[in-house]
Length: 283
View 1 (tube, rainbow, N blue to C red):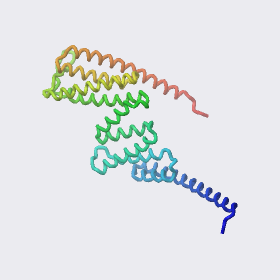
View 2: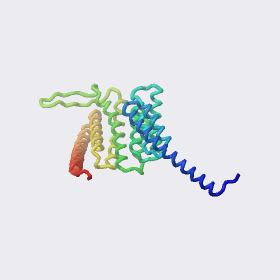
View 3: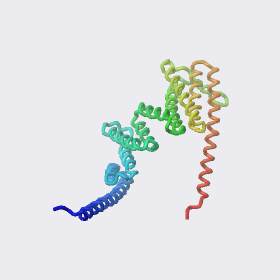
View 4: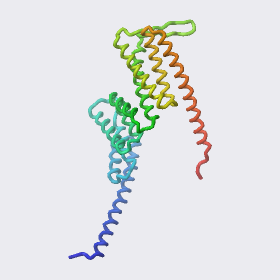
């Protein structure tokens, strides 16, 4: 039996209405699943929260926040410092969840920071260095963000040098009437000195790049001062008094700049908070 045009049109209208109704029902169910997931998350039931958030996203893929909720729920299941295969797999799942977000939104700072943070917790220093190095050279992001990556890289190089120069066997204390002086002597192992020198030199280069990209960044100046101080200690170890004094003077200037910028940033923050507090709430 052939259907009339009117019958076909009526059938199509019914199908559209039914599909629209299903979409509406799914959106309601997705919202309920999100609420249940949020409740489970607050109660520390992170695996259940992940399941609920996934259900919500499957029911309504237009839920923009669901992928982030899923990633956070997985991240909370990872236990830092526990190096079992099962726990490391959870960490990798969390990274993948954040990477999926980043693939769709390359400018998502939260997802990027979470990935770097997780790799750091998993002691994958090479991956952290790779991600930060790539970010520092990325021309498509603001200079301030590139500078932040360089500051972190510089801080790691500072730590590498400091761990060697600060060893007690590499220091000599001199007691003065009004103060205590610390002198630095070359490590017994030449390889340790060479490593510290390499780290301090590379770190200072990174800090100077950060300062060039964002001259108003107090953290960049802090790292520059710290690394200049390392260079001064290493110069003293090498018996180069002139270089030591030069590095010390540069470090002092960097610390002055850092203090000035930090004070200005604090005043700006206080002014913004005062202005916000003085603004009457909307009626």
